[in-house]
Length: 177
Image 1 (cartoon, rainbow, N blue to C red):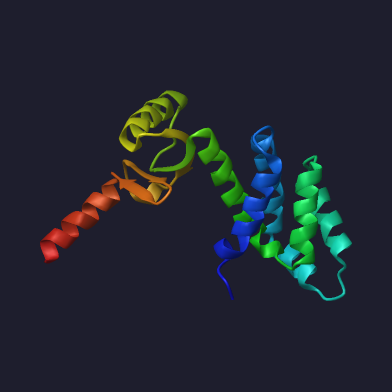
Image 2: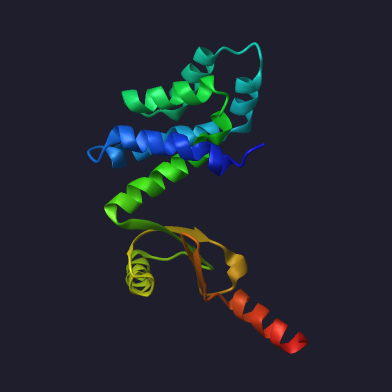
């Protein structure tokens, strides 16, 4: 079976082309909302049942997402459901968000920290990271205590790991080789 990213790409690109620049960010929020719901295992089982009609899946998905959906997102949902690609919808949302962000010159940054960051710490961290990566970043913070200290940042395919755990791993490798 094809990889989900490969399946999702045409849907995300088609929606992006259909939207234009006006309300792309607003649609990204809607697509992410339905993408989160579509990732639910019970919903996927319901949709995979041969007795379930596409209209039933659409009604359930749109009612659970609790987001007012634009006609373009409704068309996307109908197309994805009818083609049996509901499992790719979370990846479609991710790729659509990436297209919107790149158009706006903003990139998603996943900041993993051993401890919660307050607003001032986050602002300082983002300022340093924007200089380091040379682009405007939209941060998402995840608290991961197993890092022990420091941060691990993922921007696209670039990773900056300044965590204590990474430093300990480097020391372990240096000592064992």
